[in-house]
Amino acid sequence: MFLPHVVISFSLRALYADSGVYLRLLYSVPWNFCSKLSRLVTMTDTIIITGANSSLAIPTVDYLLKHRPESTLLLTVRDASDHDVNSNTLRAVFAKYPQARVSIRELDLGHLSSVHDFSRTIAAEIEKRSLPRLSAIIATAYYWNLVRPSS
Image (tube, rainbow, N blue to C red):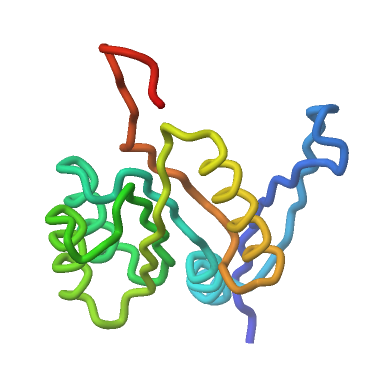
């Protein structure tokens, strides 16, 4: 029995990041393999959302949990305690999706040392494969001080 084939293209960054060289690989696979491949690819990603308990991010989290249930969401907030009303609202959103892979982490973008610690931790978790590969960062957090420099 003959199965039609589909050409799948992958772009890979060359080992030397500064060179800007990309490699393109072409594979010919049976057409029914494509649906299996797309499930495999989408199951292995992490999406980081900064400022995840903000009014802009909460509907984004709800949308991703509904339409990308295979993704791991790593949600960052300044205050992850139970006393923070916004973080509790965020928890209520992902409580509607009991199978969701969600993690809330504290991150204050106003302190560069906090950003460095967070990025090192995430890189180590991805390297150890305790987190799937990073596919997106949705930046909804910001720090804005019009009065004086932060302390």
